[in-house]
Amino acid sequence: MKVDLRHVDWRSLWRGLIGRDGSVAGRIVPSTGFTAQLTMLTAGAMAFLAVFALALSFATGRLAERWSQSLAQTVTVRVSAPADEIETQTGTVMAILQQTPGIAQARMLPEDEVESLLTPWFGPDVPIEALPIPRLIEITEGGDGFDAEGLGLRLAAEAPGAVLDDHTRWRKPLITAASRLRFLGIVSLALIAAAGGAMMALAAQSSLAANGQVIRVLRLIGARDVTIAQAFVRRFTRRAAAGSLAGTALGMLAIALLPNMDEAGGFLTGLGFQGWGWLWPLLIPLVAAGVGFFATRWAALRMLRAVP
Amino acid sequence: MIEMQDVSFGYRGGGALLSNITLGLPAGSFHFLTGPSGSGKTTFLRLCYADLLPSGGRLTAFGHDVAGLSRDGIAMLRRKVGVLHQDAQFLDHLPVAENIALPLTVAGQPVDMKALKELLGWVSMTNHARALPPSLSGGERQRAALARAVIMSPDFVLADEPTGNLDWDMSMRLLQLLVELNRSGKTILIATHDMDLIRTARQLEVQARVLRISGRRVQLAGADL
Image (cartoon, rainbow over all chains, first blue to last red; front, side, top):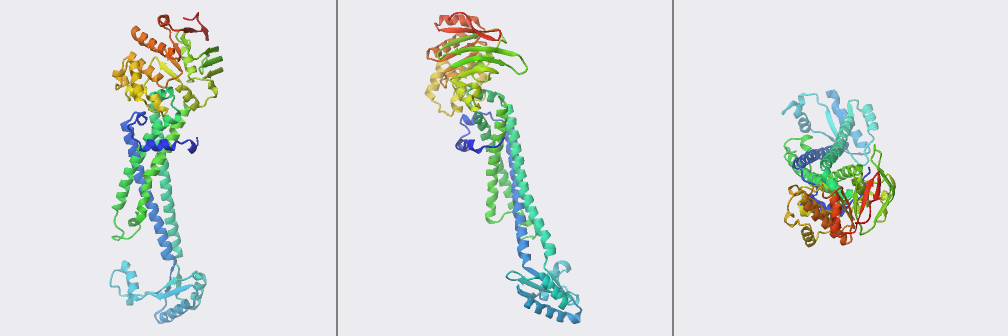
């Protein structure tokens, strides 16, 4: 059965959602405490998970973007040669780089920067001069970039000890992995919404089955299917909204309490929201209420129409 | 008001319970429907308010062929028909007054509290307005059901064995209320196997006719009361 939005009584739904539940229309269906608590608990758990899926999606998106941007414009030339040739080959490489179109800057890393790069591996106070460390030249691309393949061939011909490393080898898989993680985060959100909707539909059907007498009485006095369905829909939509609001709040609190990115670097500490991004999770209760509304309405009308 | 042309009905898996019924229930009429248990009295009433649809023939209610009505159309039809069952069912979690006003609530109409109080008084249920249905006696339930059946001011009131669970005094009270409704222009159809009830109607000076279900057909039994 397709959902026909033309027949949704939006005004009545809105009144039902924000109106007092103490009105007779709001109390047509008897309240069932245990079912209500379970429905709210499930909606809350789904919202809690949705916050993390959303955070994962945002974090991996940022990661992919950062890797893509920061690494795409940085290329390194590594010069390894015997001690008596290293200066000559380095000079040749620098000359070639300065002549190559599309290179904004070529900078040989000074010893202290090389030392800082090696510190994580060898510890502080590395005697660089005693190690056969290759010279590192950092290239910054300019304009439309340069012909990496042509530069590589020229370096091989004129400075055999020089190797051009544009990071493509390991950058692409990382970006692909981050993009897929982001996609998986979105898929997770969709699955959470689908599971939440299915749960609401099952709970509504169970509630309808348990309220056979209510339905018989309402039909006898001329209640339309949509009126009967609405009595159930209103209750479940409210439960979904209330439960998911609590779950979202807890999820956001848990994310906020994660270690700060400044304290330790890495992907895990990037899991979270930044700036206006904190507003996105606030959509979860609205989406949950919408999913609850349509799932319950669909299930209720389907069940009511199956009974003559 | 209700017109039947060769109407037949049989439950799935069973033979025909009613067949070739041709009759009319004009507006403002008062009919008793009698017949032995299992003869199809309740089925006949359910056909009248489209709780069941004929398997053959044509049944017209308020000018509409019920077979052609949508689900919403059937709901609208039922708002014009007040139904009173032997086992009157209510929403047990709502007080009597709210149960009585329920047809207005589901129709989205405002409840006139003054009219509701008058109605409660008419069925002698003023003192039970706040009571919950499970606490009512059989007679009180029937009177509350009658009030609920007429709150929308229906043109047609159907009663299925309305006095089945009541003592004689309460049966008379209920019959009087139905006669009062008929005098105000409502069409009344009462299914009953209580012949004493039918005989008593004479004393109330009501122009009632008796229909009898026999051999799957509905016949006019004797002269007007």
